[in-house]
Length: 311
Image 1 (cartoon, rainbow, N blue to C red):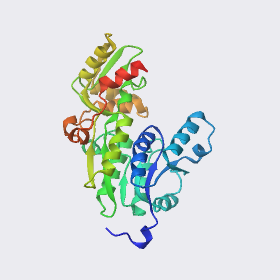
Image 2 (image 1 turned 120 degrees about the horizontal axis):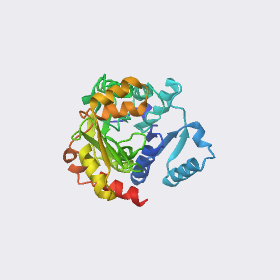
Image 3 (image 1 turned 60 degrees about the vertical axis):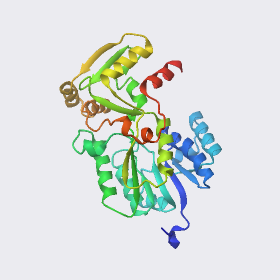
Image 4 (image 1 turned 30 degrees about the vertical axis):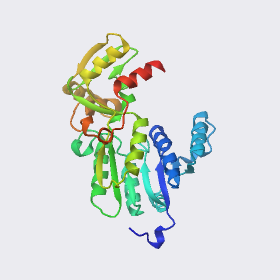
């Protein structure tokens, strides 16, 4: 498609966010973009640019070494300013997560569409929101479903949704309390046969890069990736085999989790446990994923846990 005069000045790639996922995407994407002589810019919070925190200084140094331009911008701010920012780029890859607060993903998506970016990769690095639908009890899930409706209702901006499942590390997050390595407990959510798809941020970064650069070009579709798809029962077996210890295994039924949610409707972890007990939309067959079809190896739960224990 020939570029119109007002698009000729647009730079190539804008990544939103340099957190855990954003950095993983940039580490994989920046070298490949450089080979193609494409520019990569990342948006971070204005405070990060001038931060004296060692973690921020280290991240900024990594980005500089990767040849990534860094700009400070408040994504939670003015929608018109957001649109004006996006008008300077052809492709926007949204790695912000949910930290910016409710409504932010819809605002960012509307700004990307209003700016007429060529391609938009929304923050959909999670579950299958088409299957989950609305009314799951997770407000952020409802918003993610609405983002998909917005994208599908237009034809001007190409979009690519990458479904990854949850971060593999979340299974071992003590606050989530599915696997608690210190307490040697495993809690199954819903049933022991309920399944969940998980992927590490590093694998998501590599696969996002492959999907973004794929030929023929991928457009207007949901692409599934997976590090592993595992039932809670299989998870318990893996944990005991890899650690060499017996774990106390307890099933938390959907009824119990819904009762917990009724008592603490605003508790984030309680909401997530209830959501991931549902099964539907939380998993897909690894054999049918982009990585499996293209022979790209990913880290499964057993290998992730092995690395975690060796760290």
